[in-house]
Length: 117
Image (cartoon, rainbow, N blue to C red; front, side, top):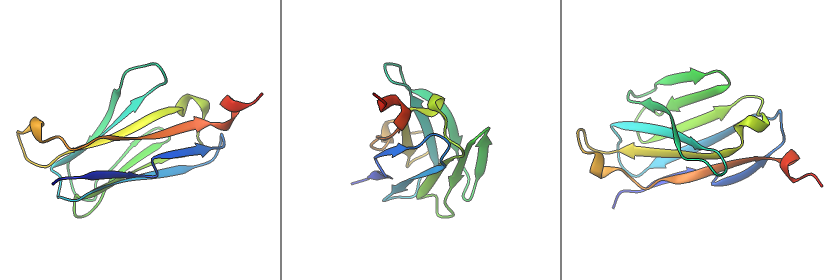
């Protein structure tokens, strides 16, 4: 079956540090979408990548699609507490077929300052 994996699935990051997370699919994807969900909130669409080797930026966030369209990465430069939340990747393996959406797994960023006593 089709699978999409996100590595790492959970990570603590010190505020100000950079971080990169990856999505890897077992099949070629026609598009890859990224979402962000704040604690207690609902998922918010961030971006869609549709081309091989595509790179898109949103301020401190950089999204990349692999050459084979089987993987993608999200890089956050100088993380801030406002970046805290779950980041989801999803992919469609067939055009015009939303029902073919692959499994979605979250990457959770939590600032260490959130856990200060």
